[in-house]
Image (cartoon, rainbow, N blue to C red; front, side, top):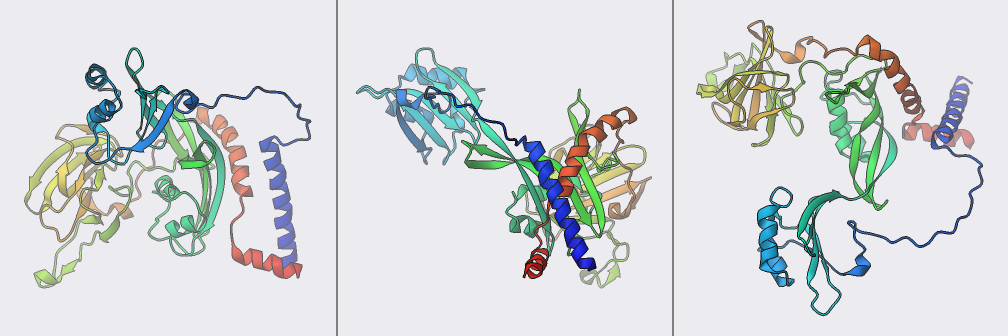
Length: 427
């Protein structure tokens, strides 16, 4: 009987959520008025392709902008003008093999190139208009944003749960960044679960070109629920932070790791470490090693001033940053440094790249952390939270997150066990 009431309440919640979704989408019983419209002219990249002979192609090995234009009957002075006067808009030396381009040619027998369109990426493109006065400019394809609700239950890894539910893979990284200090993603438990709301980007309503930022999230780890909502607390500086349902900042003053993605902890802080190579003598390891491929960007874990950027002994090339009177951090074995002594860096700035300089058996960054002049384990420190949301902003914040929280609560988990129970009950 208890099981029956649980399923009944689940159905009631589902009905309520469907009603809320209908209200959000504006569905109603209004009558649409039929209107006669003249056929619209379909434009691509801002041009009516019916006015030209169109050639689609990609940059091949050995191609250059000048040779492509000469082969399509463009005069050399025009080519030279583009090369010399529009470097900031279109650097002809930097067209890349494999990049798509379109040439719009005249429809007469000459078939001379009128417009050259170079696709920088799936959304952004550069137009070189060769008609009359030569001009070059950048533009973007029209992108349609479609809201997506998604959820997952973790069986082994977050990445796998993301893949299983056909969610954009970038959501794995974005969730890891949002919850970097509230959840240890190396210690996720089977049964941990999440819900997210984000927007998918499409060109021509059909070509998928990626996902936008997470607009609301819920993560349940070890039975502890944690909401996350983005909120711009400083409109002048355009600073966006993620806060929970009580307006607590989810970010700490320090990032958990000096590398964003594609790393693993290969050695932890350990004052009693023994190494066979040294006859099993105690050789304290006062850092945390993050293994990653050579060339992986190393980032500053907090704002601060670079006090050292040099090379010394077993440390190899390294950078040390003073964050305040209490905390300092150091990043060892770099391939190269990007910052110099005296520079001020912001949290997340790239300060160097993973290497193998100094005493190291493989590519990694040894991350060292000082508190009051003593090296400590940052993964065990109760580090201070980032600045809390100002009291005067909280009423607006709570009003902003109310519908998002309701929407999150209504997202269902794709759990096969529940589906099987409902099927059994119906039978």
